[in-house]
Amino acid sequence: MRHLGARVGGLLLPGDVVCLAGDLGAGKTTLAQGIAVGLGVEGPVTSPTFTIIHEYRGRIPFYHVDAYRLERPEELEDLGLEEYIFGDGVTVIEWADRVTSLLPDNYLEVSIQPLQGEGRLVTVKAVGTGPEKLVEELEKECEY
Image (cartoon, rainbow, N blue to C red):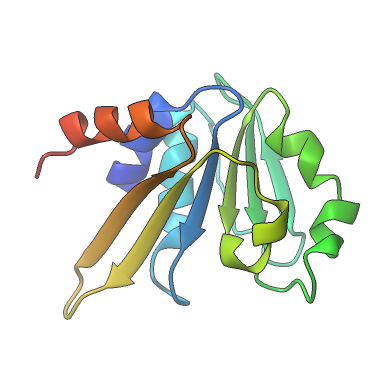
């Protein structure tokens, strides 16, 4: 997951939003850590489950959001989610299905499903028109 995340991170541009879906333990945080590597973030990247948002510096600012503990989407809105989503960085949102009313029109949706053993089925989908090129680039990079 980390290797795939690094490939994704290497293709992301300022303003891109990546929404991660999957059950507990599916690999969302590990994928986000890889994205951080691809964005040039140095040092540890930890889950923002309790703080909701972590900010990191890299070649592009990286904003890691975890909506798992939110009781309602407005809590994330109160924390200034729009400033991150429409800012100069890349925003990755774990448990984005809990805040769909706050998501932009264009984003990359990554769904992770554990398979038997240690494998994962990863599905990448462009929502809106913006991320379509990103999906095409990922398909070229990740043919395996």
